[in-house]
Structure formats: structure tokens, C-alpha cells
Image (cartoon, rainbow, N blue to C red):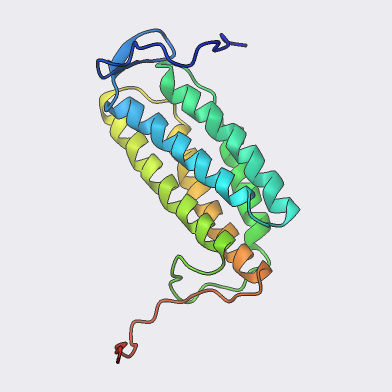
Amino acid sequence: MGNRLSKIYTRTGDNGTTGLGDGSRTDKDGVRVTAYGTTDELNSVIGMLVALPVPDEIRKVMHEIQHHLFDLGGELCIPGHQSIQEHHVTWLEDTLDYFNEPLPALKDFILPAGSQATATCHLARTVCRRAERCVVSLQRDETVPPFSVKYLNRLSDLLFVVARVLARHDGDSEVLWQHERPTIELKR
């Protein structure tokens, strides 16, 4: 186990830099910090999701994902470190297949809406896509372990499917995008 924080503020970041896990310092707005910061944000949104009434099966899966994301954040914070392995990606694929199998075929685009849990899951999905873009940006400049982007890519797919599951669980139907729709007019 790493060092425990006994003092939360250190004042070492007051100049706009932060320490990486290997002891080096970098700008707080650097690509690496943005990548692991967005991964942390994703983990927080998933924490919001599991704070809502969701099926226990989904809660357990999301808690496991939170652990994976914490590992991924560490991986991104420590240059040269790898935590996410191929088996994590395979687990996401198997979990995605499990939740997707009973769902009806998707014939329309779905709006990110519905119950609070469904909408929060869609929010997690969009933050996941942003985290993925940040890691792709990082790998343009630095070496990134091979499964980081794959993990986030599969996770965003899983979050989309879980949002569909939650829409059904909450008794809602999915909110479908309608290309041909009447204009809404408000009258006083």
C-alpha cells in the first residue's frame, strides 16, 4: 500500500504543477493530468449512479468498474505503469453481452433521457467518451499501456446498454430521437 495522507494540503501545487505517481511534476492542465482527472470524474459520475435506486446486479457491476477506473487512474498517473489488462476488457465485453442479450434490437437513436438513473448512466457514458478522447490525446505524445483506450471504449458501450436496461427497469420507455417532429410552440 502506498503512503497514507495525513495532511491533505501540501502547497506544492500552488505554482500550477502537480506531482505524478513516479515523483515527477507536471502542469496541472497537462494532457496526462486531464486524462486521469477525467477518469476520476467518470468514477464520480458512476458513484452518483450507484447512489440511486438501481438493481443490485447493476450496482455490483458498477462498483467493480469503479475499482477498475481507480486502477486506470493510477495507471495514467504513473508513467510506465500498467494496471488494466486484457482480462478487464474481456470482462466488460462479457458483461455487456449479458446485459444486451435480452434487450430488443435497436432500430432508432436514443436520447440521453429517462429516469434519474437512466439519465445519470447516459451522463457517465458521455464522460467516459471524453476520458477516452483524453487518453487518445495522451498516447499521441507519450506511451500509454495497450488496454487503456480499449477499456474506456468498451465501458462506454456497456454504459449505453446499462442505460437501456435501467430505462426498462424504471418502467420507462427509451426516449427516441425523432427526425420528423412537429415544432413546439409555447403560448401565453
